[in-house]
Image: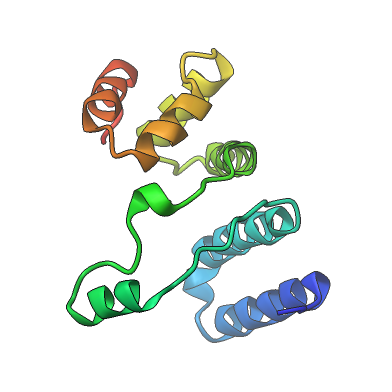
Length: 142
């Protein structure tokens, strides 16, 4: 913690460049990964989080093979998640090799056919019917 964001990004870039030097065939995907991780790091400072207490009951549940947290306990920062989602879609949209699904989502965002806030809220609550209907309407894989 307390890590300087610039140092972290620089370390990331150096590691990616080192891998590219040893495996040049991986350059395209690694540069894309670098862009994604750069956006994630930029978003960190503005993301609002709520601490979650991990008590003995949750720890015991984890030991017994259950999840540490229930999805409903997580507080999603919708504005930050929305900005990151749009940035990542933009990154995907710049590539000629992007799947049709990514292009379909970008088009839906541009045309306002996709309510991203609603999608993110329903994803957290695991609303499968909404997500399936949306996937079908946008003609993208779920």
